[in-house]
Image (cartoon, rainbow, N blue to C red):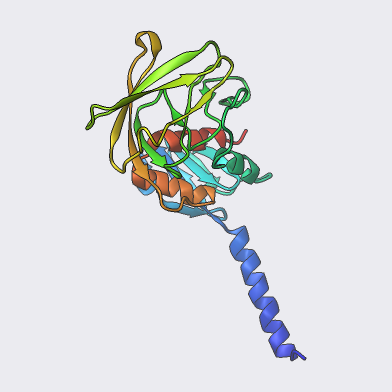
Length: 240
């Protein structure tokens, strides 16, 4: 039998856990304006915090509730109200999600905008920069369109080897042949599109164990310099 003292202690610990959960931290992913130095990228903020901004300030925060931008002079509450976006995050970060995706693109914002990749681990053939890779044995390339068959050439900068990746009519993804061209930590790969399309270059950073929550993943992407994926995470998780 538990004593009254023991039961009280257990209830107190449970209540403390609930408070800690409620006061989850968000992470600053961008800031600008006169107060930007006070809110550097990667800074953690509890959802119970209030921050004071000046005219021209803008601070972008990401947590399980989504991405939101605080701007303008005044005192702002960090925490967002409304449902969390963990289901959105789960879909965006799903590994081995699909071999061929035909209708997987989404648009930024409710009123239209650029087409976004539906998965953060897909290599966007239209973007250059560092690419954090969660599973180097199962990498998919993604194109922001579905019309026509198209073939891309991929070449490693430190190797004469190259390979061709074909997208089918109606499809947005195609597998990277990791047997023919394994992804190597720190290596840069050129992606050359059909018909003289602009070349993009991606530099691979391998992740041993990707974080499974939005704040931690955002922090990892910032640390590794994977800005394209951080931008995609922020845009997909944007609240209305």
